[in-house]
Amino acid sequence: MDKVIAKQDRKLLMLLRDNARSSITELARALGVSRSTVQNRIAKLESSGVIRGYSVQLGGAFSANQVEAHVSIKVVQKLTARTNSALESISHVAQLYSVSGEYDLIAIVQAQSLEELSAVLDDIGNLEGVERTNSAVVLETRLRR
Image (cartoon, rainbow, N blue to C red; front, side, top):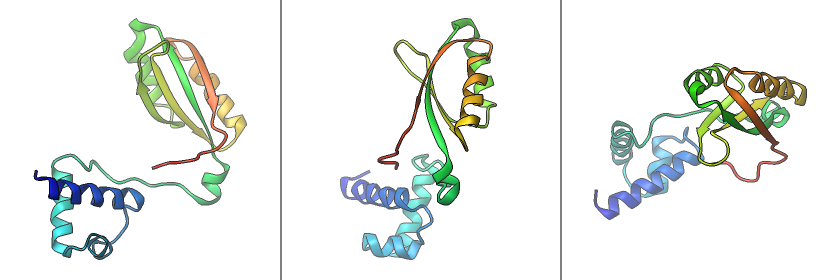
């Protein structure tokens, strides 16, 4: 891919990250290209796997009341697959990362109240294969892309 096209694709991706519901017309206007160019670029980015999908960003009262914690999880190595599967089945676990260091996983946990969050953290700590956890409750989100 030549550098001019790659640069234009990066601009398109940033516009979509800001608002994935932008119309093709709005994107074309912002990039200074035709609608068909934008449609073709998006199709190529999707087919090549650069764009894997689109998601919902929660807002309003639902988001304002939500609490989030980053949970570091130390796992018994022989039970890693079982523990991962159990964590994936907990709907409050929004993201799960395998990491290096003292802990094996970091789970991003979201709940509608501190009480609900506390219960989910207890559930995680009680899973078979979880050796220990360390939680940090998010006080304020300063940047989310």
